[in-house]
Length: 302
Image 1 (cartoon, rainbow, N blue to C red):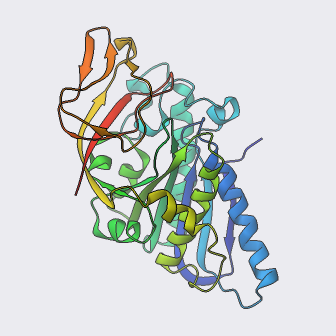
Image 2: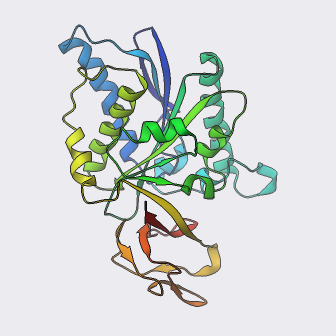
């Protein structure tokens, strides 16, 4: 049985607090496996490298425990779309609202204990479609600066377009200085999504000063570099197609993240008919699962 706090690592030295969240969507297990392995890697590093120093603290928080237990995106509603809502606004969504409250209490307690600054929040995800990894920074310059060190395409403007996400909730808090960032590691069931998540988290730890570059094996880094080599270094949000439960939305098969799209191309169908692209661009996160409110996104390379 999973616990809310999957584990933590510190050597008691002053440094940043890195909170990694996994499993906000219950069918995204790669982050759970990756951060469990990373905690073991950190413990082993001190055995094989007695000079290893870790600054600050890493804490791993699991999100939607009931959905993770049944390996589906959510039970009643999307946990990563309700952080700007109240339970009594949406009766029938008690499972996810309870999970939001419990996750928030765990994260808030860490922030309060740490003192309100030098705090980083890395939210780890995977996608239903294959074809690429990417980072979603907030509009804050520090978030973009951290993203630029992590060997994956950076998509700007998308976090701001998604309502009710955890990363947006904490980026907008006024009582603490929190740098938030989302990493999408690849397709849900791709075993390499686990390794890519480990690599991205290690890169983040190096950048913010938890570890020095010569410590912690970097054998995973090449996975990120190889997987990103033909993808745009940076792109911006163009359009999001959001869907309602009764839309009968069906994505056309075969699309992968970063596939080129032409204006007028039929991308999907719903009960109103074909859905055509409004732009030339690249497709991101086409929906190939039964649950979800985001049909697809379109981006353009910067």
